[in-house]
Length: 328
Image (cartoon, rainbow, N blue to C red; front, side, top):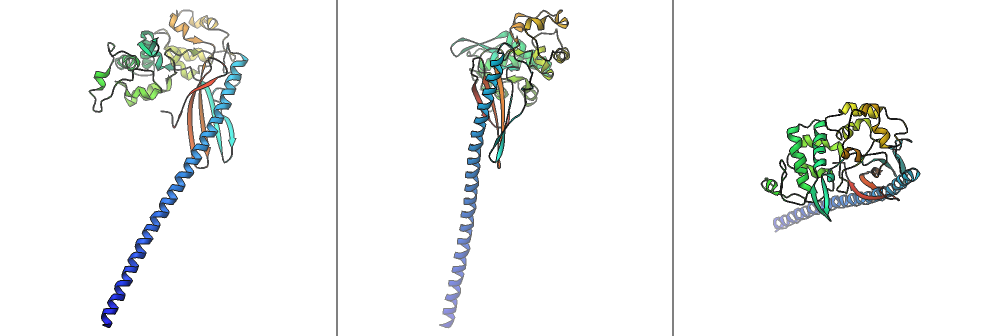
C-alpha cells in the first residue's frame, strides 16, 4: 500500500510539473505576442504621426510654390537656390525635410497620347518619336527604343490595334502570368516596367528622365531651370542636330537670372544653325507649372518617404498626387 501511495505521489508531482511547463510556454508565447502587438501599435502610431507631419510639410511647400509664382509667374529661374534646397521642419521627437524642384523637366509618359474625347486616348506620333530619341541619347539601342516607344503608346491608348512595332493585349495574354494593357493614363512611371520590351536594365537607364503628369500632353521644358545633367531632355527636342554635350554646354552658359523669353534663347549664336520644329518650340518655356515635392520624415524609430506632384497651372498651387515609399 505504501508503494502504491508513493507511485501516486510521483505521478501527481509529474503532472504538476507538466502543467507548470505548459503554462510557462503559454505565458511566454502570450507575452511575446503582447510585445509584438505593442511594437506594431507603436510603429503604426508613429507612422500616422509621421504622415501628419508630412502633410504639414506639403502645406509649407504649396505656400512656397505659390509665393514663387506670385512674384513672377511669367518666368521661373533657379535664382535664390530654391530647387532641391532642403527646408527643415523640426517636429517633436524628429525632423521633417521638404525639397521642391521643377516637376516639368522630364519626359511625360502620358504625353505619348492625346485625349480625343473625354478619357479616350489616341497615340501621338511626335511624342513617340521623341521618346525613342531620348532612349537612344541615354544609351538604349534604336532596335530596342522604337519598339518600347510604340508599346508604351499602345499601353496607354484606348484602341486595341498595335502600332507597327507595338504591343496590345494579344502579346501580354500570352505571358506566363497573363495581363492586359491599361488603356488609360499611367499613374506612376513604374508602370512602364510592365510594357513589352522594358527590361530592368533599360528601365534603370531611362527612369531618371521620366514622369507621369496627369495630363495627356508632352511636358514643357523650362530652359531656365533645366540642370546641365538633364541635358538629354533638351537634346531630345532636336533630332540629330544637337548632341547631349552640346546641350549641356548651352545650359552651363545660361545667365544667372535665366532668359527673359524663349525667343531670346533660340537666338543664341550656338543655335542659329538649328531650325527647331514647331513641336520643339512649343515644348520650351521660361516658366514652370508643375513641381515635384520630396518629403522625408524621421520620428522616433519610424522613417517616412513621400513623393508628390504639385499643379501650379493656376494659383494657389495644389497637390494632385502623393505616394509613400522609396522612389520606384
